Length: 307
Image 1 (cartoon, rainbow, N blue to C red):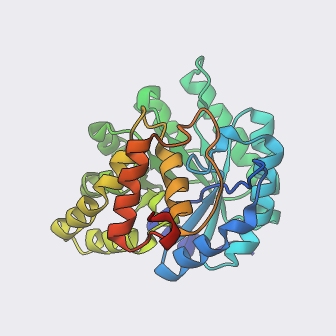
Image 2: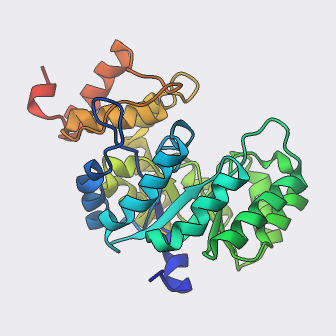
């Protein structure tokens, strides 16, 4: 049974944790390795967990692998958080995943913005509308490029079933206009994680996405709590404390984003395998040493990794 609309809205406007996709030593999916990550995130109070997001290497997965993650991970979550299933790529693949999302245990679907180099704004509207109709579940838009223009963004928010927009572009003035044009029925969520949450919150976005929750969900929850109190000084202090981690993730044109999370999990004792090309893997020696130092300072470095 999916969450009622009010509970889903509350979850989406909290922390949307983007789960990694675990692999074994032979680069095969190993979803069960998410169990301790999910348990800690749920215990910390993370509101929603997303399968097949970008931190989950969606574009590095085959369709069958994305299908398996969607099928198996909701049972691991066990209703301790809302479950959002990322869908995308070809229209046929996206609709196929969306159609089975409810049966798999998802509460909503998140539609990745098409990365095709030849994208018409009205074509994106048609793409999302078709997926939304196939899903029969609430839809969250994952908007990484606001070059579509405000008329198309507004049209996307008017599609039946669309309840939220994960805004993952730093163009804050366009965000402010998009929020006004969409109206109160659609929630805007900071899609650029903790560092961008304060300015987007000030403009009317609610909650944020996070890859940090795979490792330190408590920090993300504390930042959200501060923002909800209007204590921007405390929120910014919490963000400053994770700045070194986020800086490492931004290396190599952001190609280290997932790799740093997976490497940190391994150093803390949770092996989720390697990040697939074209991600930056393995980390270069200097970055790996900096990551070990960070984890040691946070008390997360397992003993044998300290050597």
